[in-house]
Image 1 (cartoon, rainbow, N blue to C red):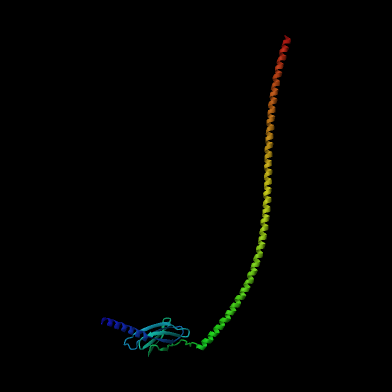
Image 2 (cartoon, helix red, strand yellow):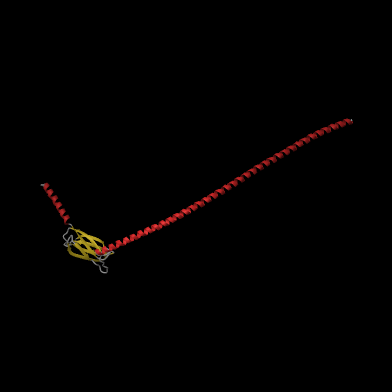
Length: 257
């Protein structure tokens, strides 16, 4: 018994859940109002004594004043209240107590006073507009391709001219640089050679001066030595003369005696 009761309860729950899921239907609600306005839509139960909200929607109308919402409902009927705002300032509100049924396609109009009403283009107008847009885009693409090809050609010529000019300038610069380096090396070698010659001459002059000084010093020493020798020779002569004079004096003395 218990098992049967559990199985029956489980089957009943599945049946109820499936019936609830199957009974849920979607209603498409289209609202026509002024362009670029904030739209708030509230669905509520018309049979409730107190205000019983079912679901709330919010969005902005497009450039033609159109906006759409999808309302999924399991109730048998519902009513709609629409509020229209312009920068958080309510410009109009309207209640639709028509007992709408779920799955119904609903179209509502809520036009605030003082606002421009625009009609959306039909499918034919849209097709024509798309054809014109596509043709315009194709023409623009072709023009862009032609412009890009012309720009590429012009850019190629410009780049080629620039490259040729750069090559010519580079060759000229290399030649000038080579001439400058060659002249600089020649001048440096000449200056280096002159400096060596000058240094050699100075060294030779210095060595010659040293030799002449040594010669003069040697000659001076020789002269001094000769003078000393002469002095010694004179002293010997004087001694000999004194000795001879003494001998002559003794001889004279002897002769006198």
